[in-house]
Image (tube, rainbow, N blue to C red):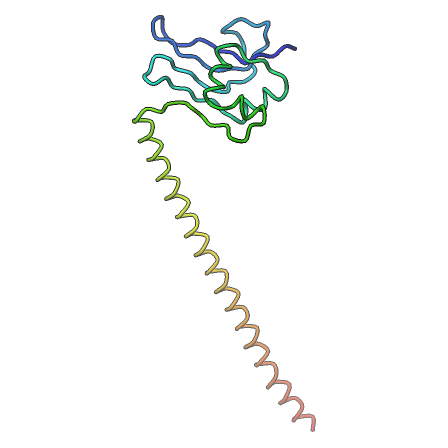
Length: 158
């Protein structure tokens, strides 16, 4: 099966946006797809290009051929360079200021959730250590209680 990575047109008549999809080359432009790997919205300023790099790399690795426009998008995102093995592959996609602000908010939320998780892990570890210490003390107290009982039994026998 000849697999291609190409654009699937979506949107209204004068407001197109595209999905970057993996599809059998014999299918229609907007036909059934194998997998959706990204989006491309050329009407915004700057254009929105979001491609799942890992999946694009996978499909390129198994022999999927990108269309000309998708090849240009992959060059912009740096995925073609990564696929060819270049270590210094860099994305040259311009990001709008609103997108940068949204990414910053997401990064703050992710950092807060990570901090909460670390805090919860630390408190769970403390509770676990306290339970272990209490168990050790109980075992030591039980042993101490058994020793005098053995001593009284020895004196009774004598």
